[in-house]
View 1: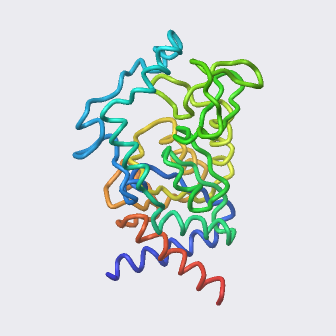
View 2: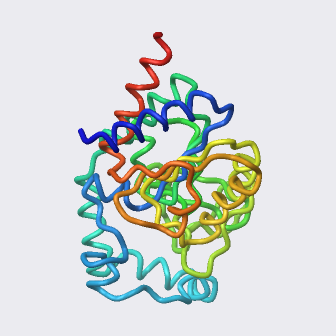
Length: 260
C-alpha cells in the first residue's frame, strides 16, 4: 500500500467515525467492479449497441401493451446486460458497506444502480433512485413486487391493489423518479453530514445534486473513485482506488478505532 492511499484511508475512517449521519451515494463504477458493464464508456452497453430511445417512457404511456410485447423480445444490448447481471456477485465493497451499516457507521445507501447487489450483500437501508431490475412497479400507487412473484397473465399487467398499469421498476428515459423515492433521498441528504461518493461520475441528475446540497450544508464529501469527477476538487478527501479496495480498508480502520 502506498503512503498516500494509507493516509487517505485513515483520514476517511476518522471523518466517518466523527460523523452523525453517513450516506453512501453509489454509481456505476461500483457495479463495474462486479463485472457488470457500464452503459457509457469504451466498453459500455450503449457505446456498443447505441443509446436507447429517449422517448422510452412516452412510448410506454402511449402503448403499454406494445412496450410489454417488446420487453418480451429483448434487444442484443439487453441480452448482454442480462447475461452479465446473471453472473455478477457483490464485490468486497458491497460487503464492506453492509458491515458498516451493521456497525452503525453508515445510515443509508442511495444507489443509482439497478442490479440488486446491495440487497444480495445484505444491506437493508437502500434507496434505489433508478429502480431495481428484479422488481415491477405500479405506475399509479408505486407498489413494488419481485418480478418472479408477480403473475403476468395479460399485457399490460395491472396492479392487484389499485388497477394501475404495471411496468418494470427501472426508471426509463423521460420517466420521473417516483416521488416517495426522491423524497427519501432528499431527507437522507438533509440529515447527512458525511457523504461517500462511490464510483459515481457525479453528472447524472438528480443524484448529482445530493453531494452539492451536503457540501452547502457544511457536510463532508469523501470521494472513492479511480477516476476524476466534477466533485473531486470540492471533496474533503479523495481516495483514488476502487470500492472493492478502499471500502474494506476503511472498514478495518473503523474497527480499529472502535476497539481502541
